Image 1 (tube, helix red, strand yellow):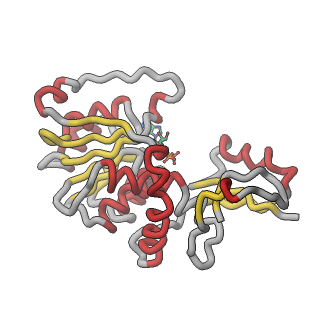
Image 2 (cartoon, rainbow, N blue to C red):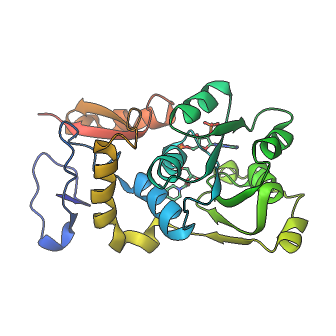
Length: 246
Ligand SMILES: NC(=O)c1ccc[n+]([C@@H]2O[C@H](COP(=O)([O-])OP(=O)(O)OC[C@H]3O[C@@H](n4cnc5c(N)ncnc54)[C@H](OP(=O)(O)O)[C@@H]3O)[C@@H](O)[C@H]2O)c1
């Protein structure tokens, strides 16, 4: 089962603390925290329920090499079959990986001509945009989103350390009459159980790649601080999971 339980080798909780049934993914006992965890569920509900992506849509996903973005790219392209999916990520290696997940193209936001490259990759514009980044990357989305398109803002990671969020392309809000709205995973908690079962099916069918979904550290309970420190040392990839050993 899944839920918010206290750390411990053994614990007794009431039924109300249990939020769901653990994912049925053979050989991946920690998948409920990674490939089927809240990060990935956020990507799923963002693409399907918030942006309502369909086969007819061209979609752009920012932070596309991150945990949320890489899942959003795969749902939009490999599960829903969106017409064209373009990711935005930092550097050629990450862009190549995003394309290996199924994206039709991926643009490097660190390139000096990023905005021009993004526009070239989207000759017919984008109907839907899934933004994890904010700032200059979101500003560039204003230039490619189509009239009456939708930008769903999931995260603003470029500004979490206090960087100013400056925009120079805001005139497009008026000229294109597009919609921009934020969303959080907390709006969708009741849908998580059913969504996790669906995603487990997509993984089994090979539509969603979970290769870099988690880093599992096996250690006793008194080593929790050392394990969490890996998060801030850039030494984990995907969801960092501690598996308690005796
Ligand atoms: N709304 C919600 O309920 C909800 C839930 C979960 C997560 N989120 C948000 O979703 C976003 C992604 O989370 P995550 O778990 O996927 O994080 P993650 O795995 O750490 O990925 C974050 C990605 O953001 C990119 N990034 C970081 N700084 C950037 C910058 N200045 N400009 C452009 N790109 C930048 C990085 O791209 P490169 O590595 O390619 O440079 C990285 O791949 C975060 O903003 C997070 O707060 C929101």
